[in-house]
Image (cartoon, rainbow, N blue to C red):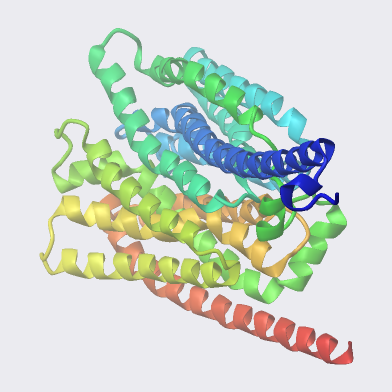
Length: 464
C-alpha cells in the first residue's frame, strides 16, 4: 500500500528537513547577530575614538597654550622694538610651523602601529622644554619655547590619522576640533589659577600645568591605539587611506592646484587672524574691560565650541561627500559673514565687547576648524584621490603658521602705536573680505573639476 501525505516521508527524511530548517534559522540568526554586532562595533568605535581624541588634544593644549597667560608688560627683547612676549610667541610658533612642514611627509606616511609611541615621545619633548623654560636664564627662554613648539605641531596630524576614512569621521573630527577651541580657554584659566595661588614661581606655571594634563593624555592615547582600522564599508564610502609617497604628494598638488591655491592663501590669513586673537586674548579682554571676570576665557570659548561642533557634526548626516564638501564651503563663508557683521555691529555700538569676542571667535573657527577636520576628509572622499586627508591639512597648516609669524612681527614693527584691540579690529574687516573672495575663487575651480570629471566619465561610459 503506497504511502501518501505525511506518511510518505520516512522518519529520516523528516529529520533531514528539520535539520535544514534549523540550519537556515541559525544562518539567519547568525547573519542578524553579525549585523547587530557590526553596528554596535561601529558605534562603539565612533564614541571611543571621538572621546579619546578629544581628551588627548584637549590635554595637549596645556603643553602649548598655558604659557600664553604669562605677561611681560613693557619688557622688550633687548633694546629692540619687539616685545619679549611677542618674541616668545614667535619662537614657539616658529618651532610649531617647522613641525607642520615636517608633518607634511612624516604624518602622511608614518606606520599606524608606531603612532602611539610617536605621540608619547612628542609630548615628552614638549614637557621637557617647558621645564627648560623655567630653569634657564631669560636669554635662553626663546630656545626653550622653540623646542616646545617643535614637537607639538605633528600631534594633530596623528590624531586625524586615527579618525579619518570612517563612516563617522565627520562627527569624530568635529568633536576633536572642539577640543582645541575649548581647551585653549580652559588651560589658560588653569594657568591663571596657578599664578593666583602664589605657590610656584610664574615661570614654572607652564610646566606644572603640563604635568596636570599628562595622565589624561597618556590614557587617551592608549584608547586611540586600540581603535580598529577602517572596515570595508568605511573604505567604500570614504575611499581607502594609504600612506603617501613623495610622488603621490606632488601628483595631488598638481592635479588640484587651482582649487588648492586660493584655499591655502585664505588659510594663511585665517591662521594669522585666529592666532592673534588666541595669543593676545588676555590683553584684548582687559582692554574690553573684562579682565577681572572669573574664568572669562572659558565663558568666551565654551559657546563657540558648542556651536562649531554642532554645525560640523550635522555634516556627518550628509552621506554624499560631494554635497558635504559644498556644505563645508558654505559653513566657511558663513564664518566670514559672522566676522564682518560682528565687527560692523561692534563699531556701531550694537553689541557689547563680550558678544563681539564670541562672534569673532565663532566666525574664525567656523572657517578654521573645517581645514583641520572635515574639509580635506570630504575632499579625499569626493575626488577619490590617493592618499590621506592629513597631507592636505598639513600643507595648509605649514603655510598658515608662516602667516601667523608674519602678522605678529608686523604688529610690533609696523603698527606699534596701535593697541592690540585696535589692530585686531582693523584686521577683522580685511579678514572677512579676503576670505570671502578666496572661498568663491576656490569653489569656482572646484566646480570646474567636478564638471570635467563628470564629462570624462560620461565619455568613457559611451565608449563601453
